[in-house]
Image (cartoon, rainbow, N blue to C red; front, side):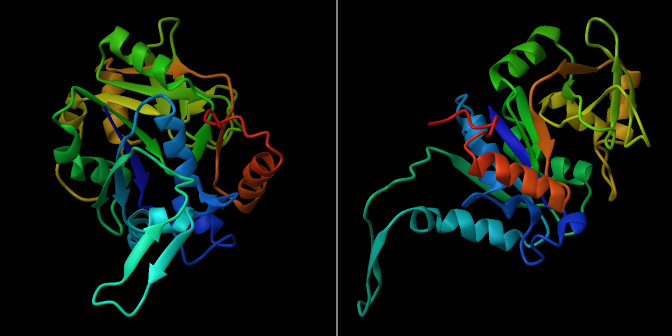
Length: 262
């Protein structure tokens, strides 16, 4: 099962942290937040990723192309027809398969998901999340919940400050309403960590400017095809400098709730 991660946004609200790299590459400790997200999924055995690139996507490409040399000691032999590189210690060894897909500099979230259809449609279901949010969610339970209800889509509902898309659901988990970024709210909000059946592509028509969180999710609600997985544990996006400092502080103090690997 593949995990699609949206990595193409420009992150304009966090430019005071780093202007020259895409937001998913902003480091928490010594690794990009994107790496933390992928490590979290991989700890549950989900190690096939499709990264939707846009703004400064070459930075993400370079990170993975040079991953072994960036995360290990190495010896470089110069003066040869082709320089020889010998990795010395292999401190980092990930059994990941990573597809890096250019999905457009200015594309919206729905456009990006539609653009990677060819990489995920051979599977019955796939997962999707944002490249700037960390959580201690149990991914196995999330997937089991999605398989059990049989609907097209599952979104994870969390309870942070009311800045994001609010979800209202009934006792069974059936989503009744999806409101994008309300002014203030006391209910659950969308935390990403989606699971989709292939039927989601019927809700992503051709055309530019398609926001996944707008018409597609509202149409899924109207068709009673969107369920919410309630998560009351840790969830935090990295939207601002304050978020960056908070997440960095958790990691540096060895109190990161999302760290589920050794």
